[in-house]
Image (cartoon, rainbow, N blue to C red):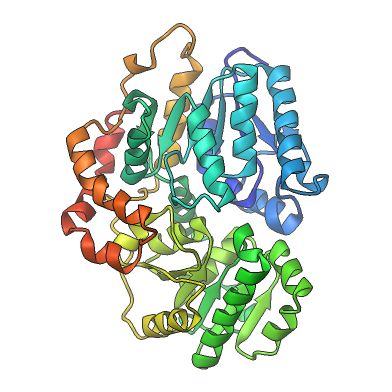
Length: 440
């Protein structure tokens, strides 16, 4: 243990996927860190397989919280206690956490309680829907953070509007793009999964469902009603549905699992490894999901997306015409939207050189920033003395972000959003990643 070590805290499947590029680059740079895994998600299918497939290092500390907590409040309490204990034990120079999970929320509060600087990655993401626990988690994490790493220009705009100093904001992109491109560039797709599920490329629609709010009885029944309506309407397609353990439990409790099994073109599978899932996503006709991460992955792969939520934090996927928000309260309309999308021509993947959500090099940027802060004295130096790639064109930011925020405030991010925002805004949200790299 040395005084220059810092702590990385993660603990979920999406966390493993997104933190992987950061760990890869830190290891290449020879930077020492303490890796704490909370165990918020822990069974082989949901976590361990991702460590194996993405070549992640074994955690220095495994808290095993997910196996002991009975509900969310107890889980968060145990997470805060466990992470606080490790911070006091190792006394890291700062704590880094990514995303909007309970683990990230707990890491932020544990850092605050111990007086330890906190760096939040994927900062500034906003769905403007406070019924989502994740929305609360990321807003608290951003408030506590000393440094905020944003994946998009829009996320940066959100932080500036909320009053955070531009000197604390670093635009880096989404590390989820890095992991996806790593798999594609290294030929790691697992095409045998297509044979195992007896499906053909482009002849199936991928379905994912796991968000807590969608597992409430009323919403879950609506989701299943929509899925059944689509499956009956589109006989020519199969629907591949890898079931999250919590989702499967709720479907069983409500007697909906057998209903799905009776439909010949719905294929229910166990949770998949990351490589198998990306293989399915890449070969799918389109994806129906409530996951933020899947929206990003599908966007990068050029897939049409149907999002089973009233809003999304990845607004760029909507503006670019890939993502379609549907209302659970209008099942017939949702079925019509999916049906119409199946008849549309395929979309090309976005150009990564100016992609609004990342170019595949976010992990490198994050690792370099963390390297800077290994030597940085938060107590005795001014953060704004560092060269920070924040967006400083405040007048332009205000002009472009206002219509977006007005539409979001009305809960309208689908048709009216796309129709009312000018192409100028879409162009503005593109990012010249080479110019960002020169600033780090």
